Length: 118
Image 1: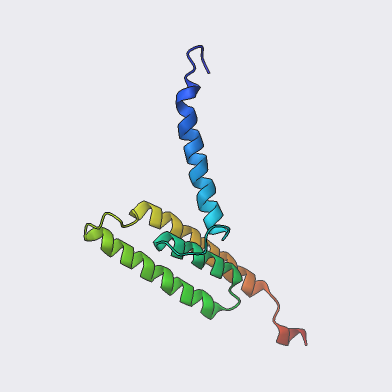
Image 2: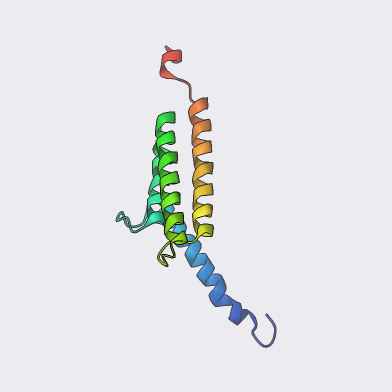
């Protein structure tokens, strides 16, 4: 900060960015409202389902749901619907979910089966 207080101008931007990240994390962890409000809320709900998935079939079903949400939102965006979520936001959410699915598949593959333990 200089003698003119230049940091004061950046403070709202920094706080706004931090608030956005915290709000997204809050929803992603399932701590927010359970009422679904839109495609991002649907993707957050799928994130919670991924963490609870116990089979490959469940993960495949979730992947299909993610694809459906992305296709529907991109179609809305292409049709000029101003309420559609922007592509960059959707891509970030989808990438994060793909990463969670990969991690969950790895955990399921490493988990010893009950049949082999007997």
